[in-house]
Amino acid sequence: VVLRQPTYDAQKASLWRSTLLIPVYLGVLSAIVALFHVLILVTPLKRLFFRRNISRTPVIHEDREAGLLNEVKANIKSNGGIVIWSYKLARLLGSIALFGVATTAAIIASDDNFQANGKHWGKKHRGRHGRHRHRFSDYEWLQIALAAFYMYTSFLALCTLILSKRAKRPAKNHLNILFSSALFVYLYRDVWPLATFTLHPVDPHHWTTWISIALLVLVAVIVPIFMPHEYVPIDPSNPSKDVNPEQTASWFTFFCFTFLDPIVFEASRTDHLPYEALPPLADYDAGDHLRKTSFPLIDPLVLGRRRHLFWGLMTYFYKEFIALAFLIFLKVVVGFAGPLGINRLLTYIENGGRDAVVRPWVWISWLFIGPLVGSAAMQWYIFINTRTLVRIEAILTQLVFEHSLRIRMKEEVPASEKPTGGTTVVPTPESEPGEPEPGNGHQTDGSTTAGGTSQGESSSRRAASKGKDKPKKETS
Image (cartoon, rainbow, N blue to C red):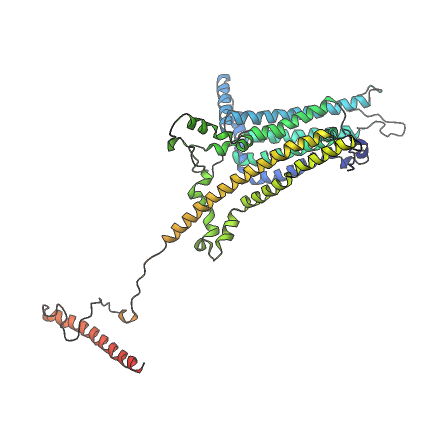
């Protein structure tokens, strides 16, 4: 295996192709996308400016302190509590510290380059022909670009604290992507070479480099993994009074199922756990929500056309099925980590480390990382699969009951008994030939005339119809 050495000298030929600029390019793209978000989310920005205008009104000192305290309490409450607010504040401070470290690295690099002249890096000297004798070095330009990048990430981190929930989510997603990209670049440039025999770190072996990596681990790994999620109701007009712990659990507690520890400990201390002690149902698992969101895709009457139930369920649960396919693929791939690590480790021992590129502790770590990732992928697969199965059962049960309530008993009336003309005739039971119509003998002359006329007409019609049907039966 021959790996290309990512030395800084090789990247010096083209500054724009440096890997340190990858986060900067993503930051520019994020700023463009954020501009469209600003155009869409105009209302939260108006509310933000409206709050600033209110805070500028002149008040006395005591009221200002009380108002500031109330504003901080309201901000903590809007961010989901003191725990989430503390993590967001730590991310903001970490981003500001990264900006300071990048600025310091640029200043130190300039001082080292111009130590012989004793001049500041911002001053330029002209030669005989009016040209610049000393310019910013490539490393200085890279650090200046990173400082601008961290200034933008600090602005996004501030937005996650002060904007509304609808605007916080895009800012949080952009922030996680940008910090992760910067961390991966530093790992590739300065950490991965330490795991090999042939490569060397690209950036200078200085405290600014390792402080930057440590801060990036804080803001890109620790904060997103351990920070609890904010509760975002499915129906903003009807939020849940009691939130399920699953909806606010952090990624770490969710993968380890530690958010279920309180209910497990409570069940271990009692013989019978009542129904009221169980966690409330999450609002995205409620039957009413499943019905409203799934029936337009699986109910033929709501859909407006006939489609097989399988395709409707696949359309509704396409995210879950994609996740299941990816987890199965991941489980199969990481299954090769253990055998491959053993093979490379034995090869290293057999050759005595001759012509080795990767250090043996990397292959030893594979023996632990492979089963760990495979077990996590399988547990996540079981969770998604079980939850999807329960949701499908709930949807199909509601669909069957909904369709059963649409069934109506319909009685068909023979065409011969349907009324003709403009008169309304009340149907009477047929009587045997020769028997008097019931009630005719007790009627008065006026009523007999009117009633007899109508009854005579109906009886004559039935006799005529029977007379017409007889020849048809004989001919047949």
